[in-house]
Image (cartoon, rainbow, N blue to C red):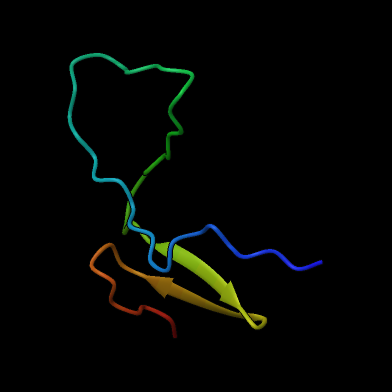
Length: 60
């Protein structure tokens, strides 16, 4: 039996927002950003592609 994917065609990383105190909520998922670029990684047909938050390919 096959299933149709519910993953959107394009994912966009969250934008960081400076706050005075940490935000905590069990209904949210958080990402750490230490330094560098926010990227979305995609694996399709065994090949990896990296995309910026603007959708630009950064693979290579």
